[in-house]
Amino acid sequence: MLQVYNTCIIILGRSRSGTSLVAGCAAALGVDMGANLKPQNENNPKGFFEELPFMQLHERMLTT
Image 1 (cartoon, rainbow, N blue to C red):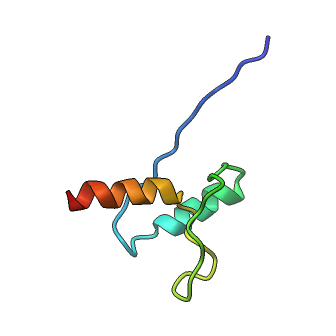
Image 2 (tube, rainbow, N blue to C red):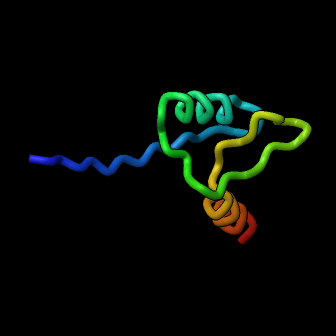
């Protein structure tokens, strides 16, 4: 019998608290971080491992 597990991993933390490091480790261990990730920039050349739609929702929630 095939069992399917749906799991959601949420990594919470303040800016510059290591959330990208934890997310990067999860990605390196095989966790699917999504297809629409925030791109890297000069402050974080390895990337952020954060889904842009969730980031945008979070920003809207904080500004309303």
